[in-house]
Structures are given as structure tokens and as C-alpha cells.
Length: 290
Image 1: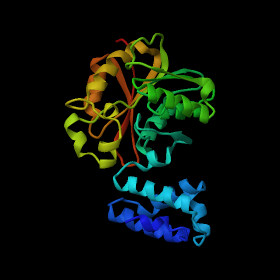
Image 2 (image 1 turned 30 degrees about the vertical axis):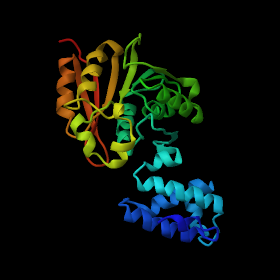
Image 3 (image 1 turned 45 degrees about the vertical axis):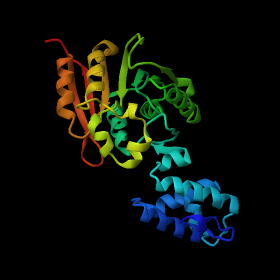
């Protein structure tokens, strides 16, 4: 099926044509774009560079690597895992099987955070994964400092590497821990993209997600709200009196999370929608005593 792509006499254009057909047959939504991304990755160039000279030959070794990556993509291994990185906000972030792949939907959390967080404060990111949320905020607030917590050691190491690669290592620290356990002090901003998929819904997700992204970062319990219950119950003790928390929401979860928050002594400040119009980021603060 893809052996022809390893033909040492093959051109860039021929490789892209064949790969696009293979990916389309496998049901990939953007086959031509993904073919360019994979070929650019193995050739060490930008995908737009491929379009300038479609007759350029592809070396046999690169063709073999391309064929191997294409075979993995057909099994729905995420393209971000194949190329090893993904763009988020203004950053380029390394990814691995230890973390969720940052998605454009989560940029709504960054937008909401920047709207309420001035420079110079302390930021806590619970369940940091790649460090995407924390690092995006720190990139926009050059005198702020942040701490990212994750239960998975590999995720904490990856996030630290992402901080260094994006010039933020001096203002970001990462640690392994169970949410807020052993954290002392208060923060001006708390961020979290917790697991929020109901357990029974995980097998119904896209194969890219269900088969290849970590269940620990997806599974929110029977109703998808287990992590929110844990987090909102501690926010009042972790936030400065004038601080805010911004939580990512799953589809249709705004009302349930707002109810959990108000019962925990928090006030709802606002909600921000993603590009699809879905309530994606909920801003909370400690309630002012009556």
C-alpha cells in the first residue's frame, strides 16, 4: 500500500500524491495537509517548502522513514506524536504519550486567564501535561512566575523541557504530585485542564484520542466531574483574596461545574467560548463575604 513511497526515484510531488491517497482511504480528515507535514518532518524542512519544487527527489532513506510514519498514521496514531511537537498559542511544544496533545480549544483558557491576570503574580497549573497553559500565560506576562504539577513524572519532565525550549525555564518550575497535595502558599492565578470525559464515553472518542492519549488525562469518572470536585474544593485555600482560577470545561459541563464551585465558596466571574461557540473556560474567584 505504501511501499511505492520508498522508491528512491520518487519525487516530492509523487510522494505527496500517493500519501494523500493512502490517508484519504484511511479516513483522515486532512490527508494532503498531513502528508505534507510528515514529509517535511522527515526531510527537515517546512511543509510550504515542499510546494516550491514538487519535482525534487526524495532520498531513499527519507522515503523509508516517511513510509513508516505513514503506516503509523493509518492506525490513527496522532500526527503530533509522529512529528514530536505541536503548535499552541505562540509556542512550539514537544509532546509524548505521557500527555494530552494541546488543542486550539484550550487557547480559550489562555484568553480568559490573560483577561483577569496582570503581570508579576504567581501561577499554579494543576495537571500541567506539556505545560501548555502555564507557558502560554508566562509568555504573555514577562514578570510572572509559575509552578506546574502533574502526577506523571514523564509529563513533568516534558513540561520542563518545553519551558527551556521556549525561553521560560527561569520563570517556570515543575513537580510531580497529586493535584494540590503538599502545595503551600497562595497563587494569583490557578489554571487547570483536568480530565473531564465520562468513563463510559472514552471508547466512543476519536480513535486518535481513545487509543493513543493517556487515559489518566481523559477519565473524569462516571459523570466526568471527579477532578472538578477535587479541584474546586481546594481553590479557596490556594487563591489569593483577589486571585482567579480558570478551568477548562468539557461540552455541556458549565452548569455542573458552576454549581460545584458556588457550593465550595467560589464566585463565577465569567465563561469564555472556544472557536466552536462551546463554553470552554470558566473563571472563578473566592466569594466576597456578605
